[in-house]
Image 1: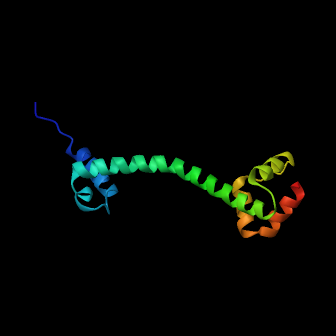
Image 2 (image 1 turned 180 degrees about the horizontal axis):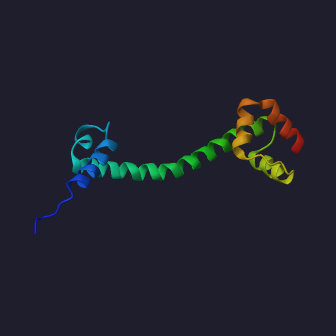
Image 3 (image 1 turned 90 degrees about the vertical axis):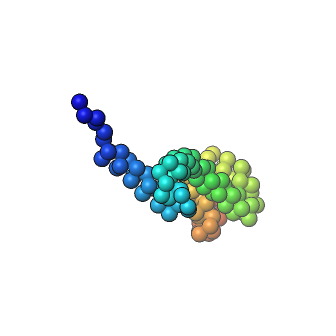
Length: 114
């Protein structure tokens, strides 16, 4: 019985990985074994950093709200406590946007919760 190999699928798998490695430096872009490791590592970083990005944005929103609240004479924790107690249903993303781009609207919220 003749030897059976599946060169078509093998080549397709390799082409897919090398296509993902396009733009990498040196042998990482065109040598299969090096490119495969580089792409695997890149995928791990991408997966990890999709989670990290959410953390980073939340911390940025908190910094912006804190800065704007302190200009109105209130700390971040006091402000957020009063926002929750006052039943204002705005999340940190929206509050940070108001603090940056619409300071009058943010001041109105602060005045309402004081």
